[in-house]
Image (cartoon, rainbow, N blue to C red; front, side):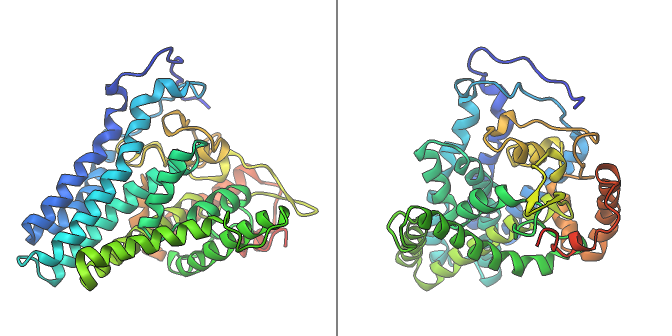
Length: 380
């Protein structure tokens, strides 16, 4: 890894070090303004979240600096704080809009739909990304806040799937989230929706069985997911009636769509080598696509440093390391651009399949036949 590593901070990092990651807060008044003003303003949150950050990526280039990964949590106060204050702000924002929009006579049907999609863009590109950071932490408050955000997208089971299935089995046929070589997003999407739900439930059931407990035991987090999601739907109905529930559902579906198109990009075509006897090689940085694009990593709190996240899942987002081509495969653009291209299979394959083939030749020249890997049959 050739990138420059900064010294280890000995005291709390100043607010200016975390300031770029606080840009997400600007999205809240932008979304509220879209509902208050209507018209073309309803497009503003969607354009700002993805298109503007794609342009900023092109202007600012790559950020290859790394904080020392041994930096203590106490030095990361301002970085952690943004992930802690976002959940209550998102709850207030979403449910105020669920209350306000049905009463806003200046909004037509298309405008209501676009504002709802804008809500989902924020719930997905910011809320779910922050939930991902929070669910990886050990203290109960952060994990609970992560559950809160995921259940606002009616996708609470994602935590169980992500921690118990995806991180253990990434790059193998046992992981429904690893996109297969040549698989289009539109084939991946229904497969992953079903696979995530069933694999997460089976993982929790297996954990309970090892304790000689039935799946319906009260400690199964699926009860918590269901209770939170039902509570949010009831609250949406109480604030906005049937239209309020519909608005909430559109934001949830938009958020989940964003999550899964990002999941598609993160591991497309990358597989761990099968060693025989049901064993796979250990997870390495090479098993996730890396992107060091500056602005989109501000928005996504370094999620694009995904190679290091899977290599060291317990690292907080400011400490995630970026890698060069020697250690991890590189995406040509940040997620805002890559997720757009993922929606167009021909363009996606033309862009990414040659990169997957180059990755295979670089890291696994000894494998001559990739047919089982392409079909996710290796090790089965």
